[in-house]
Length: 400
Image 1 (cartoon, rainbow, N blue to C red):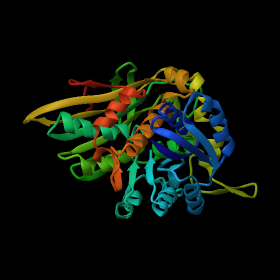
Image 2 (cartoon, rainbow, N blue to C red; image 1 turned 135 degrees about the horizontal axis):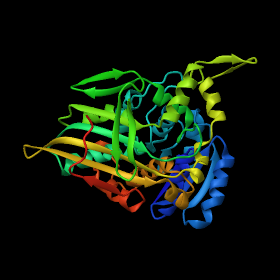
Image 3 (cartoon, rainbow, N blue to C red; image 1 turned 180 degrees about the vertical axis):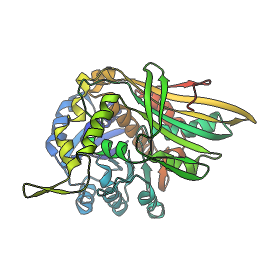
């Protein structure tokens, strides 16, 4: 049915690529492109004899729009799936616009020099993508991504209006290291060390990092400490879900993680400001990333489960209603299937699904969209089919 250029070859990309290859009827051909082409070649060698999907590889500097344009013109994909770094979203979107190629990503653009997470840069492309007749799907991961689809599904099938959304991201896994991050360390640490915020009554309320803590008992995981963070889907959900009064995002962290992170912050290792070291300019956070375990290496040693979902409060037929949609994912089951831990799995599978829906024409309309703006039903059906079955509760424990 289609040909896709996939940019990136890290942990999430490995999952998405393998899932594409399980879905050969839709993904007839893929090209894996990365700055380090040897990683692409190694993944191709691992899976090419297990799939009908035709796989090619390419070396690509995703910071360079002209190079991306050249590869798109050479390969002629129906869509580009961006699984590179968030810093590279705009160069890839520019290339897709220049070549009139559909675009899908999993995380919003971030400038390299500021830990700032917002959609304004990508939303600025709306009219240009619409005029070009091509689609851009923003944030087709889990959070954002599945959480956005969950919100659209809840509104479509269970509510006349949703007033409160609490997004809960629990990783109950244990990798055995004193300190490691379950996805790109640079992105992870920037995210959790930034100020928190939530949306309430039409305004942003800013908090200090890790200032607000709650305890929640997660299905199949147990009781965990969770902390309020800023997260990008709050921004789009606040605009697109009618009746909304408050949206919050919480993520669980163990005490060991927090203690190590505070120590690293105190000695300057989480800084993104350049410093001089032995005559060379380095960024401390990038150096820290280099010495921490590669998230892609955590799969064989991570045990436990994740539980990620949304608690909704609102009204149906004039009556108050609560509803909880979530997924539980087992780290070891993910590793058995794809050699991945669950954090990469829960992002990589939705990346494949969003791309599939664009290729099939179900989510193919000109413009730039967040997932809650699109029909949730085919995505929800695909979650059950491709490894992320969802669960629901009509009387959930609420977060105070």
